[in-house]
Image (cartoon, rainbow, N blue to C red; front, side):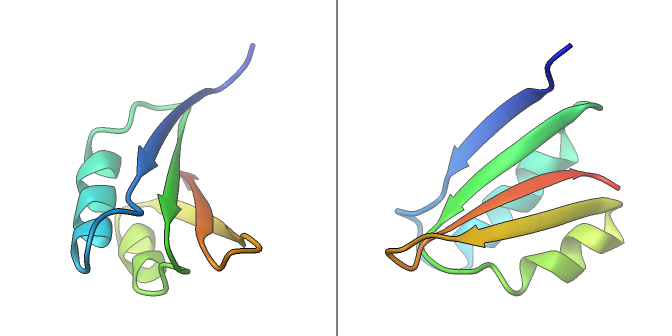
Length: 74
């Protein structure tokens, strides 16, 4: 059984919109689903907010400096 992935492309948003849009998305994230967020930079402020809400975020920097963050329930 494959996991469901939802993608959120926040690269066009200005701060703090990427953070706010990501937190809105995790608030309704179904169990067993991974949220994949694309941002222009590493979302440093996001990790503590995810932890407070019971989620884990793992980011991978891309060659152009952008970041892909995979978020799932802890």
